[in-house]
Image 1 (cartoon, rainbow, N blue to C red):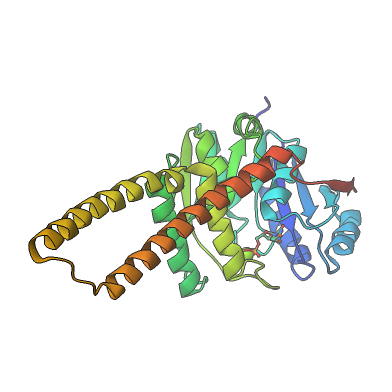
Image 2 (spheres, rainbow, N blue to C red):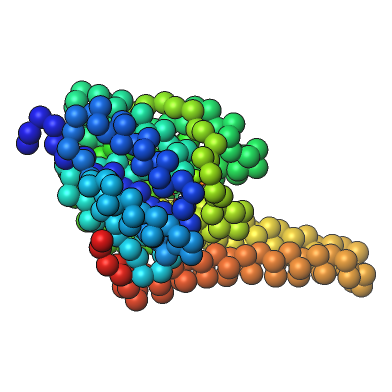
Length: 309
Ligand code: UDP
Ligand code: MG
């Protein structure tokens, strides 16, 4: 291994025509000062705007660019996976194209890598650029996820990080189709350092993660790394059965002592509705897992590459 090994920058892009050029200018400045040889791999994730042509024309000016064109939109996790699989570098950095991940941080990543770390993650200390709702829901997600799953995803850490080839090899051993990358990164472990930064506003364009997409993303995260939501029904069932036994004994006792007393419409209705609701919730959660099992069992590729340019 040479002193300054090849650095692969992985950039998933979906409808990002306004930002790619600016991103490229900014990151190139940083990469040149790093004195590492580098490649910038753009993954065009089925953009509907001019992202593809924009990158293609930039490729004439910037020789370090590689452009991988996916056959349609597969989502950020899949696009990033494609980039990771195509990377040739010894050091790999996935980064967002919208400049919410400041490129300067790469220099600090490299410093920590020189100190012997295999993973250097970027931690957002100031997320005021994200909406209150997004921060609140993100916070809730991390707390819930970490409580019920056996891999801990550090709060406020995204995909922006540096990993070595060794870590990438480990990641590639995980065969799953539903690639919740934050969880996968955490799952493989390795000696990690943290670099803190302030999350900036998106440079231009729009975030493609709205509420519903984030909710599904959170479900993916939880179902990928925990089976607690499945197992909890055993305990819910035990609790409700135990309550029912005591309630039943009480009714029998009452009937023996005071005779039959017919009214009971309200309690019957409440109990029926409550149990119906609980059962449907249990079935719904089973459904979440079965659906994922089904998709996983098809063993489809995570993404399809149309071509590399
Ligand atoms: N992205 C992608 N495919 C998608 C959605 C997003 O490759 O289907 C890319 C996007 O171009 C950007 C990164 O993923 O580089 C992060 O997306 P975004 O900024 O919309 O997410 P946010 O920062 O709001 O979480
Ligand atoms: Mg963004």
